[in-house]
Length: 126
Figure 1 (tube, one colour):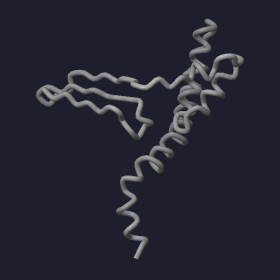
Figure 2 (figure 1 turned 90 degrees about the horizontal axis):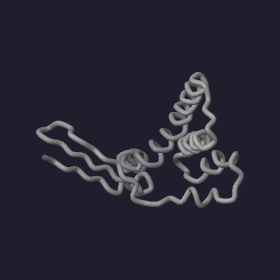
Figure 3 (figure 1 turned 45 degrees about the horizontal axis):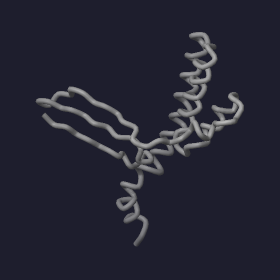
């Protein structure tokens, strides 16, 4: 049995860990752990509730769409108001597009391309 532990995963701000168990080449179990308190709740104390999605979107430079969606869902749950299935489907499409357009570009060019910068650099510097 192999226990693989990646903690912290440093390219995502160092607060997430993943633990995976593999037995005889087959996936058995995994756990994701958040090991750092971010304190979003503290930043929202005393603020008007309707501002939460806008404020949380700006807390992290990478995950704006995710924090907006999750804070919106938290407000819905706290108030007992839930959108229709059609509204949820529309929101999921909008979130997916935001994630693709912003997060994937950010991750690719700011986090992953660093790994290839030496290979690219040698072609441009003589």
